[in-house]
Image (cartoon, rainbow, N blue to C red):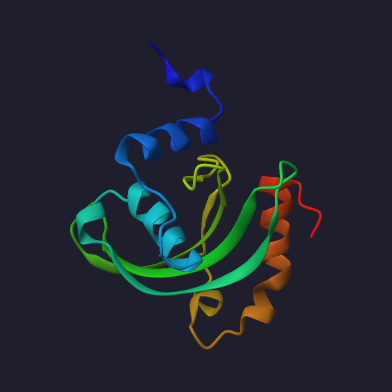
Length: 140
């Protein structure tokens, strides 16, 4: 059976359902960090550093959606501990789980100026809106 025929956000949703992951009481940025953690080569080495909400709105289906910036430390494929920074777009489903596109839902930021905690969220607002449009065809 080949899962590639399913939309990638469905695969992510099914994976989270199997794990029982829900939005619970974590912040939107921490939830985005959990999504990043699942994409790493060494998820056990993941350590959340900080996160910011860049955009919040609703999908065409009325689901709550977020674009967050997440900074984290994790080991790369060679075992070196590195600081990473990513934008994550995800939505909360009706049954309080999260879903995201495995194609467009996570974008690693390579420009470290965008990753600095001192960089104001307002400076990244346009990037957050563009990612929301790409993932949710948002109205907000």
